[in-house]
Image 1 (cartoon, rainbow, N blue to C red):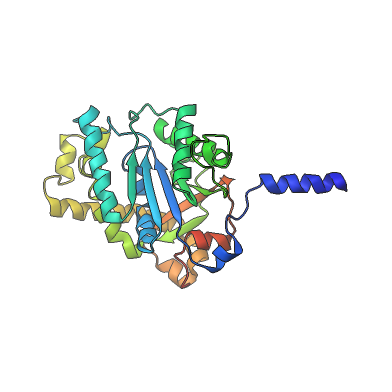
Image 2: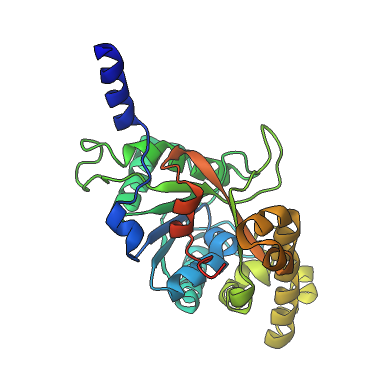
Length: 303
């Protein structure tokens, strides 16, 4: 019996807790959200709608690009492109009401190194994160995959006092979530939560409109032809095209995960959602209950 009690006590230390005290559950508090993308546009694309919703509610949102995006364009590269893309996400952040940081690591060269893991760990700690987002480690781009691995590798280490001791360790483990992707091996994206962004959809489009090198010029795989097809030199027409494109994208997420929207919003409202963002809870880090998820994603209070 004594051995069993000792085992249970040890287990309670290792396993993640809810991350919320009883007082915090009763009182509204400011949430700290940080999202890691591989390139200057990934976090904006993936959580832009929810980022705006959190920011409007007074929560703190930071979007981090682990590379500077310096080869992400067909017609320019190097320092000038890195500066351009940093300026683009800074403008997008102003439009969303969020904070942004772009690390000076070459695009296409992000590796799963100890130095990079420590950098991610420090960023999570400095933001005192409650929620952390990243790519899944099964995405198409090596930078995406390594972003996912680096963030997962930091999931436990953010709480270890003598790891990166220059930044105080977190006393509560954040909840870690994955962005969606379309890949099925070793397993497909399996969302835990889906959020309607209908109320902020136009604002999301306005934010990513700032990412001109990517959304209007085609990024790394664009061309002169892309400029014509996307009306790059016509601000009004190109934004109309952008809205239609993202309506299809976020509309596709809503349609694909309709049952999950109904689960969270109820049948009537869930069926009515036109645009959504969805996220998968990582098994590492804090594993919140559905009630606790409603505290992290406080968008369902009227449901």
